[in-house]
Length: 134
Picture 1 (spheres, one colour):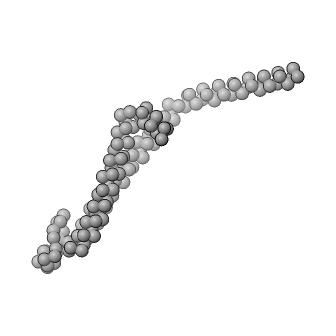
Picture 2 (cartoon, one colour):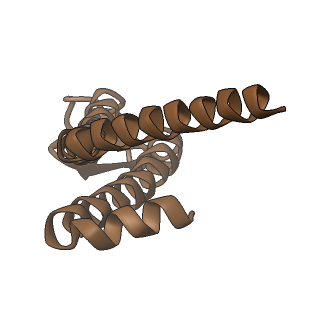
Picture 3 (cartoon, helix red, strand yellow):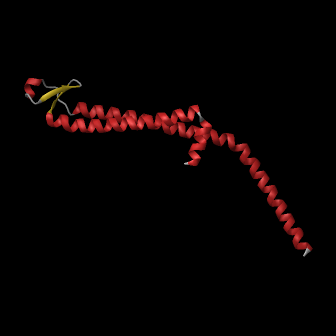
């Protein structure tokens, strides 16, 4: 029985040593891990802002492409001018719905990503706590 107890005590001692070295390794690597965490989330928010701006640019381009360069007289009385182009009532309605929807998506996407980016930059510790609570 004595031999079994000494072997168990030796195993527990080795386990504690391994846990201590693992804990020291984690403590040594924690600053680098946090830097990578913040860098990744900052990049993700920046990409979200870029995609929101691309969505706005795409919606304006599609709106402009759906209009005509012809004058108002050639189009008749059903046309109106917007962004330097003439639109028939049907094209204006369809492109207006698309542009309005994409503008709303742009505002929402941009607001969310600017909020997160500001949160990370201003209060990184609070962002970390908030991230792991959610």
